[in-house]
Image 1 (cartoon, rainbow, N blue to C red):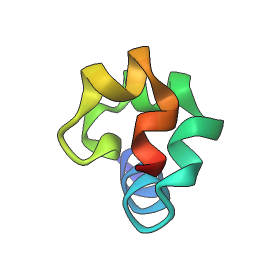
Image 2: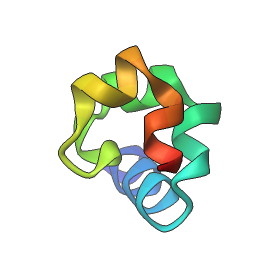
Image 3: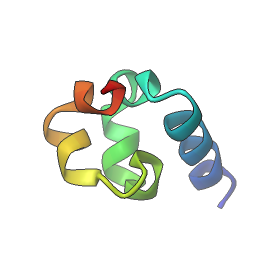
Image 4: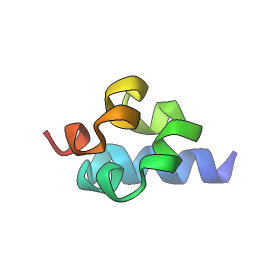
Length: 48
């Protein structure tokens, strides 16, 4: 649960983190702010 929260905060507060942790975003969809598909296929989308 701690890891889920960590990735959620990391990806939501620092969107660029999604492009650096694409796998994490795939494993923890909530980390991508409810945009798991775009983040998994196009990690850079998180920084947009």
